[in-house]
Length: 58
Image (cartoon, rainbow, N blue to C red; front, side, top):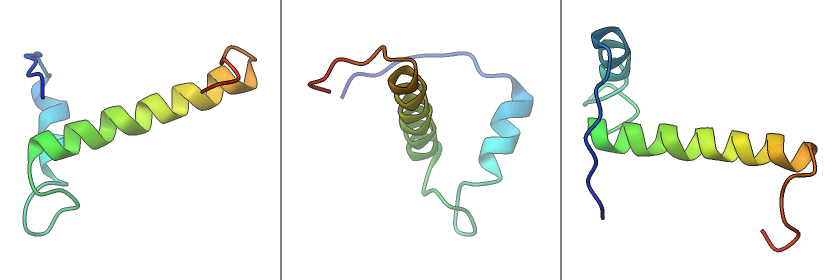
């Protein structure tokens, strides 16, 4: 799996950390970030589909 480096504002990281750990929805930050990216991409696909910008084979 490729690794990336990205700067994240402290406020966003703190909000993310509220959902990570034993009492959270995610095991670790990486899992939370991957889930967030996947959800964002799904939403963008929905928008593109509504705008007729998706190929028929997707």
